Amino acid sequence: MEFITGLTKKEQDLEVILSKDIEVKEQKQITIYGAIHTIRDMGDVVFVILRKKEGLFQCVYEKTDQEIEIPKLKEGQTVQVLGTAKAEERAPHGFEIRLKSIEIFSTPKKPMPLQISRWKLNTSLEANLDNRAIALRNVKERAIFKIQEGIARGFRDYLYDEGFTEIHTPKVGAKSAEGGANLFKLEYFHRPAVLQQSPQFYKQMMVGVFDRVFETAPVFRAEKHNTKRHLNEYTSLDFEMGYIKDFRDIMEVETGFLKYTFKLLKDKYAKELKILGVELPEITQIPEVTFKEAKEQVAKEYNRKIKNPYDLEPEEEKLIGKYYKEKTGSDFVFITHYPSKKRPFYAMDDPKDPSVTLSFDLLYKGLEITTGGQRIHDYDMLLEKIEKRKIEVEGMEDYLAVFKYGMPPHGGLGIGLERLTMELVGLDNIRQATLFPRDQSRLIP
Ligand code: AMO
Image (cartoon, rainbow, N blue to C red):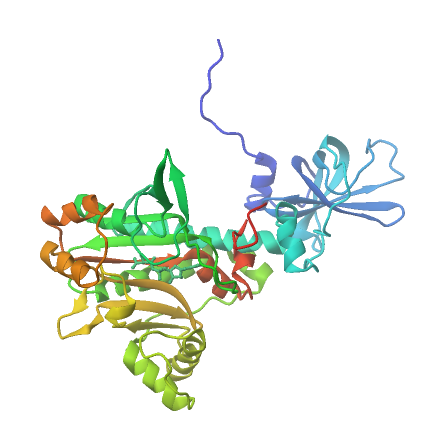
């Protein structure tokens, strides 16, 4: 009988070289696998560039060498090569592989729909998204999603360290938390159901169990607008924490997360930051300003009329970002005390002025990347607000019941992962920060 031991095999030769444990001064035999990214035929010498998860690797062979067996090579083939590694300053990672033989695993049946071996994919966004799984093989495109991985990893690692429990809540339900008309409706065994717009109800309920929870998962918004910053399905980085003193505790955790994550990116994702030319923002502290003050300040500074006193227009957010960047040097600014009218029923009103809530948004380079705040934790207060707003409670019974059995003062936030990625990398459209974007016209791939 054979047994599985759980000892995974790594490409040991390559790992040793990349970890710089040995200098590739003398020739060293090596086997590595990858996809053929490009082939450059220089006459007698042929350069074969392999694409691997670690980056690009240069292999080389001389056509005059009788001893080597090289089959017919094509871009896009997946292969395993055997050769000798030799130091070469001009090659990626400082070495190249002199080929001895190649084993081909697969050969493309068709020419590539996009020239993915180009440094910059010179194609329209439409063509990129139509051929997404191929476009993402491009080194720059792929790097965006390694950065995105770093953000989600930073969120997880930081919150684990802060004593949060990771949870997974259902995405199909009878009712959603945010209300409004932007719900995807579906039929669930002859009953009406919706796709969750956020894990709001569940994360609050779980505060009663774990005190501090977080989730990174898709959420669904049936919004009809077609903009560069909206998706119909996006990944929400949510957390919720109990026993808070006030909503500033939540802003502190978010600032801590950002600091931690930018350090993680600097340490572990330097290669991708370089590929994309990203300069990480320096954060020591983030300015905080009230909604009213920010609105008035920008109206005054840029000579604008206040059209809607209850919400921020995208243009206003841009100007707020610009103004506080000039004033404080920070790319980030917390806007606090949003009007109660514009916040969901679960938001805690400010006891000093109930027309505003103890809530905030975080703007990054003038784009809203986060909404958060303190929630109502008292059952009677929650019912009173629901009644005042004439909200239908059917489907919310379980959420409401939790408050009958006691809940701590709590609050939390939701961060749009794609928006944060987009601004950090400096992309023009949120779809570029989404592996397979879902918008009004796009349901495939
Ligand atoms: P909100 O609805 O403001 O709050 O969403 C939180 C954050 O999610 C991002 N976001 C979006 N990203 C892409 N496409 C969209 N259509 C989209 N809509 C929102 C933004 C936004 O700041 N339950 C609350 C959060 C909380 O209070 O905990 C909520 O979902 O970055």
